[in-house]
Image (tube, rainbow, N blue to C red; front, side, top):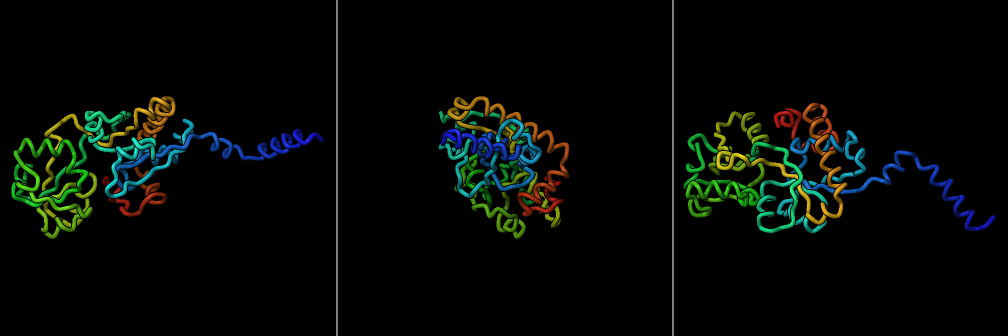
Length: 269
């Protein structure tokens, strides 16, 4: 037999034996989504889109990457290390500063970032002379800067800033007077421990501001417009499913992503 024909015959037999699911997987486009925090119900829609096959249906194989302390999510996307990112309103600020980012979707319509404060503190203005525990990325939030400016507060002068420990211990022990938090997270722990606190909403300073912005780079969107549209649509399908099947997604998180939070905390979130 002709050597070239033999090779072609061998390859045809080989590829015929690849299972259909593997063959389909070979055709999927691999992309990475950089999350803005650790695995929890905050990203439920993306877990659902992966495990219910919505991404695969749209030709995508998606990796979710957890946030690492000190990471610049915008830079991760603009550098090309990841194709898509989830972040807060800093994405809008980045665009206003001329950075080539493109907003694709917004999932939280109410700002999730709040300040939890001791009972005598009822407003941002009451933080004057107090100790605020807050993460640097939250301190850089355009919304928080606006709130401080409107109340005439200067960070470091009128408010003592304490680096965030990413737990509530310092607040519970009275070492700080207030702390930044997600309304869906830390209040659960404080309520479980019967700790009195006030919630200071920041959305009052900019009512149209939400949270959880899905974005990419201009370059990524321009070079891969169909992939970008497919990513948005599959993500939206995932969110619709997750919000209609909360208990199922909580079990999915516990079994596949993280047990840092228990079932009740995830359902609270």
